[in-house]
Length: 431
Ligand code: SF4
Image (cartoon, rainbow, N blue to C red; front, side, top):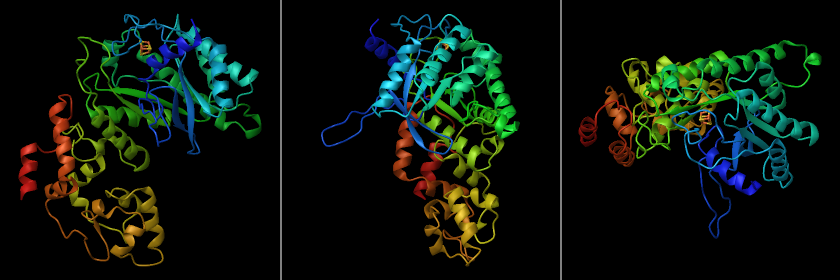
């Protein structure tokens, strides 16, 4: 098969993988504009030092021996199949790199013949790149679940980042929707990557040798293909961050690609708002010192459609506010909607030198429009002392935003519960 045809087939099959920031976006340049993106091809990722790098995104093969219900590449689908050779992937990567289109490679794969065989092909590819072509660019590669530990280790010494996709948020759903996958095989490489990385960190610098997965590991979960609550997904992410020191958990709103009785109908809209809320909650776990139990409780296990998780937490815990910006500890400032890690640091630094006034807060990076209901500054509460959290909710949501959400809510039957129902919102808004 011609290389161009292979690229066409495998690009189509790769576009549902979201473990890199820009996949799924398709924009063409128009006269007078610059920059086009494609659903697959070149994607972006972030290195440990925060740089955004462009990666050539390739699926090694879509000729999968597994039959995961939710996947376009499952063996029971009658779609064109193709497989690159290691040499082709290495040549393509170098070609793009030499033309300055990319800074690295994002290489994923379906399972061809067996997990070991697939892993060996990926190793061979990375070896050609690293050893024969001297490629020192960034490489993100999928760890193949079920592959031998030695192969995973070898792959890890050739890559910068590895990811093992958890795919579904519970063992039950995995069993039902990915019957060929053993949940144990998914978590085993994650554990191995964590252990080898730790062992390497404990070695004296001179004895460390080549770095093992220096940019850490990540994973991806499909949202909306199975019935788990938002709370259970956030709890899994928290557990993964703590247990395996993951760099990122990616959430992928399920796009119905297969007609299947076990899955939402093909006409179902992907739950994009839910995916967005999960990213917001994930941010709270990683940068705002929230726990999963604080973000969502057992009795309210799903996100509020109308409020982001931090604002939702604040109105549900309104007795903790207002927070005095002059005296509150850093961690408490972080909990205020409209105050992020940077602005909380700015407050802590600035108040050492002078007494803060409301006029100072904007300059320190606080979003007053959001924070005003939750802070006290110089004995003043910018929005006045409000006793009714529901009033705050209505104030935080603009009418325009509400209309958009309402439309979205009526279109999508798979969406999540709101804190209060539509009638109550309308009543409060008209007061
Ligand atoms: S293993 Fe499952 S999810 Fe992965 S490519 Fe094969 S069918 Fe798709």
